[in-house]
Length: 187
Image (tube, rainbow, N blue to C red; front, top):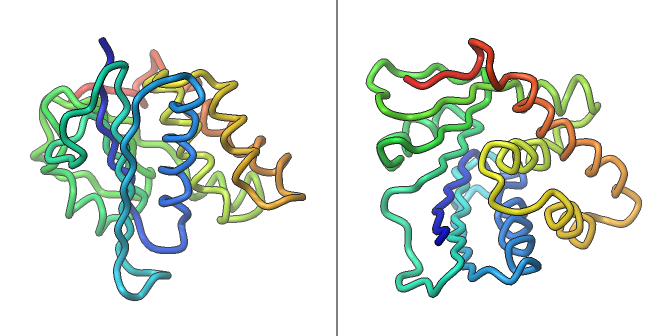
């Protein structure tokens, strides 16, 4: 039986709420049970943003997350606020611009250039959320890539499908290129 709790954190405007919705939709396409929720600061852009997704093969008894299995943090502020909500042996996916504290133990850390890849390689920071989704898929394999891509293409603005598909694949590549190297580590 599979049951995973995801917390996607960053700042408003990074598209993490959309990313949470897309992850949930991909799981629904595969017949899984899903709960998705979100919150953001009153500033909307630039304020705190959080999306949570629970994915399970069986019934979900409680729709809230206390300690998550997978934490994605795109900002230092989000990392600092939510790192203590990650379970032991959980997975931390962070933008490589984030300074990790020395108190992280018993977690799998993936520090990858999400924001830089969006800006420099893809050419727009607007797709950082798709890069993050691709990295989540590559680390967890919680949904098939085909389902995730279908959910992405159903939610992104018309005319941006190829850009978002490319960003999704870049996120997968960021993880796959680091597995088995010192850039991927267990703390």
